[in-house]
Length: 243
Ligand SMILES: [Zn+2]
Image 1 (tube, rainbow, N blue to C red):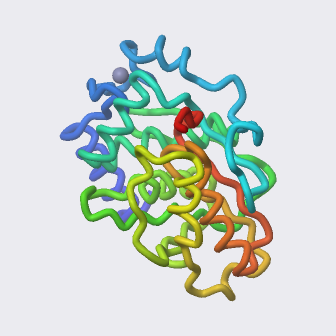
Image 2: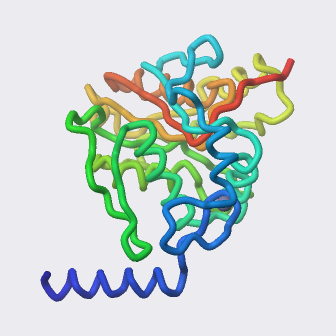
């Protein structure tokens, strides 16, 4: 190990000692444990039987498919809201790696509190990882971007946050009917630098997929700019039970 790598390893060990790993969902210190003993039974219950989301339950236009890990309920819902509002990079790392494991079959191990990727999918399915843009000023952190960063690292695919942007301001989706949600997100995204998307397979990352209006409209902009394929992933999915 050269001097620079040794220095980085020592810095990482110090970071782990000063800021030990925490459960992404309840915030308890995990330390060297792989998963949280408190949340594990509920997480098992909330884990989707198959990550792939049925097209009959979500609007997945312009997408080749979508996948999630959990149902948006219980400790998952509380955890996501906490992550969104408090914004914790280390917590997003835990969840991003978990998404890579459940959805794409990456294997990882934690050693002295540091996560190492042991194996990645043999076939590279995507060329770029792109997070759903979030222009909200209310939240200090962009959850999809934090997750996308970890997925990009786990899958060894470049992440781009500059290619997909908001084209206009949108209203909060909460409290709207399915039709209003689609209308609110319609043509809400634009691409900057379409030459870089030509023929590319994109992994689009969001935190929660509800109706699918957000990821569908992101995919619409990406496909129109020449992307060959767009597949969406999120931590959790919730079936829309509005009007
Ligand atoms: Zn927990």
